[in-house]
Length: 308
Image 1 (tube, one colour):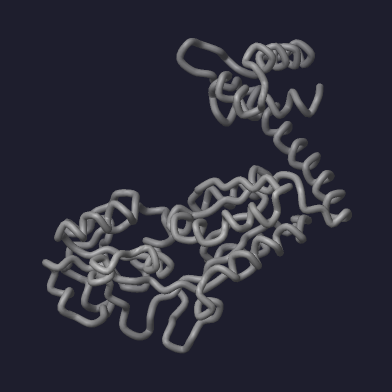
Image 2 (cartoon, one colour; image 1 turned 90 degrees about the vertical axis):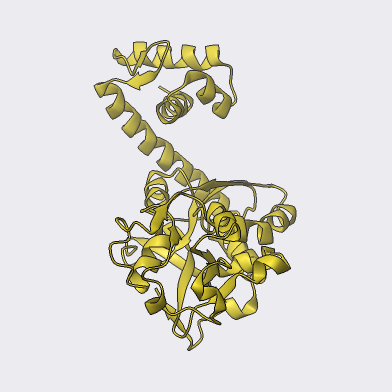
């Protein structure tokens, strides 16, 4: 039984597809299949049920994969400890990031980061908060850029910046004539909100006390801030955007922007890692790169803002 075989069965388990797993692992499908079959023979069990339509792990296969996942995670930790001791700035560093942060933050720093550290293989995956936490605990990612919430005591987190929520109001909505938005103004308006499970939505619903947000006939749930912005621009309703989005707006789009009245709802964006994380040199470089490429005002909260 080898680490390579464990890597293959974990990839198949995650992707439910031999060809895709082989591509991810950088081998041919026949090679991957043969290595997995060899492992099954060695263990005397069938790890996967194979059919023309799908690949499904057997009950014992799930247990085998779970243990393989843990072994791979610990093997990676050994490599990470050695690289950190050598103060090495090479290897793979996998970052998870929220979909409501990625489009507005990544263009600011990621290209420069990869240029500054050409020997590092930085990879990014968009995940919701719950999936970021699971991926961190499993060792699928090294760190995650998320929003600070109350249930993160089992992780280490480093503050990156503070970001205000901004209103985006269609010209046909009565709030378009207002200079700012009060949370008490929102009931009765046509709101475009993200699906449940997005902390961006959940924090707004809580702060603005949008009652019955899930059931309201004037509240629609899709999945993309960009989609909602196009709907507002077409003349319907109100949505909300993160502060970093402002720099990407055209002059016409900026006419639809309305700040919240004081206190302004603000989210704390953090870098999340496990308590056993060891590659602090790389993490420090990523954190510094992010902080250097967001507006300096956003590095601290001011007295007009309220953390949500």
